[in-house]
Image 1: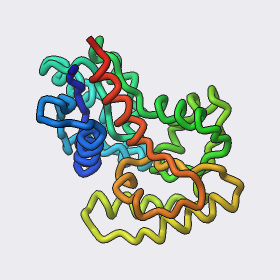
Image 2: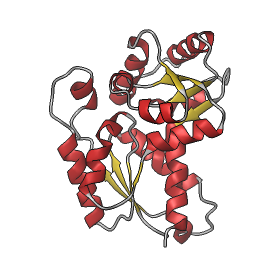
Image 3: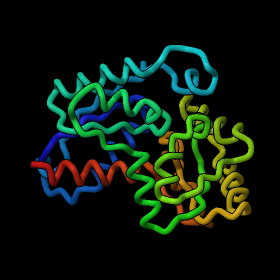
Image 4: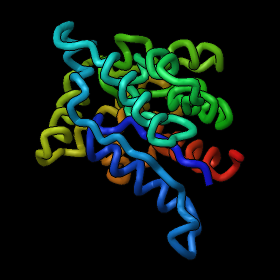
Length: 226
């Protein structure tokens, strides 16, 4: 099978969760049946929240480009990045190497279109909204993104997960209820920190986790590429 390079550390637990999902996605009978991953677990990537929400701090782009280069040098044949917000820098990652980049946002948008989603409630970092990260892909698929009217509750959950603090899942449930009341027909978990909490969410609406879309693409690439 073909190795996939992971630009990780954003955050570290989300990267580990991706690895666990890839592991679980393969019906292996021995070690050699599993997907080879080359993981660059770099929690020192400059804060995307500081750069994109607060308008201060170091540009993460050059660090991500170097990580992509390092993964290519290590033998990766494709790249993936389990952080929705960091996809603001997707073109920087793509330009750093000739390797294919498994774009989680485009993969997720295609999946939602296949599911018939039209008005999608977004559980995501405010940076995803501010940078219109899903905008081009959603517009191409005729999907409307609906974000919470107040960024604070979801952002507080994301910060708590990053800090390893106890998290009250009811905050996300209340945001889901508000999004449902605004006519959403689908919920998208578009922050890989929140992916750690998907199992705590009710299924009042269909729920898609962008990390699952990336997992499927990694497995598909690794098992089909020559």
